[in-house]
Length: 376
Image (cartoon, rainbow, N blue to C red):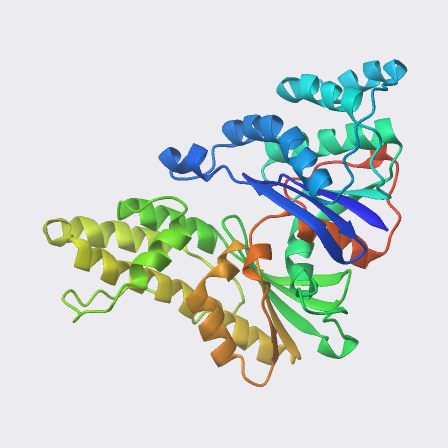
């Protein structure tokens, strides 16, 4: 079964083509440069960029999968409905119609699309695009939960593997999903059976990285910038910076990172005259370690309390080298899964792979709906 997968939940336009679990193409167009001056994702701009990028990324994904074939035929009877589906996507409509007039129906069996959670304007752009493709080419549409896709991305076969790294013996599992918009602990008993036991009460971990990086004058996105600064060769500590670990000892499994952000803001104001490259390096290392300490301690306590066999890491922040290394070291006694870095951030491959593992055939495009606050 060939799957065309589309991801537009935030600021990455991702489209992939899979043949069952094999990835034929996985194209991601990043908007980092667009949002850098804002220090975070600006939803209206993100939606506009998705509209500009979707056809470009689609053609690249189909071409790399050898599924892009020219054909000068167009069913004009369907044009009115296409315009109706894409009435909110005016910047996309013309390019979409040009695409339909130049290329033949790709040999795709199903379209997988992210419907939530995420930024509503961005989700709508992707879903309306997928609906138009589904309608015109008469290909069933499958709605995918973005969080579930991050979890299941751990089981995408590595390049040298011939079969899925997936066994029933890994369950029950505890999944830590950590990104710019999400910090959640999810119990997983099997594919499709989940229970959220903890989540952030305010800022997500990735959001905390972004905001504290901005306070330090580091570039967006904050996670990689702080990690880069923290990884610089350690010199003698001059400032003895010590930040709080919010809710690290609370009796629940929830998170809170707004207090950490506030502590960084007050500390840097207090030390304004001391801030130099050494100060930024030491502060970056402390910010990163504070976040990691909270994530690891909460995860391990939940893993022991619920007697799970496996700890699963997912989401954009799972690409952080220190988090991966320290979690693996502390998770002895548990199976430990972490996605390849190319699948840690938002991408189409994880959406298509989630659709493949769910083994459903898809539905009528009219039934798919966006839910920006979709729960797993």
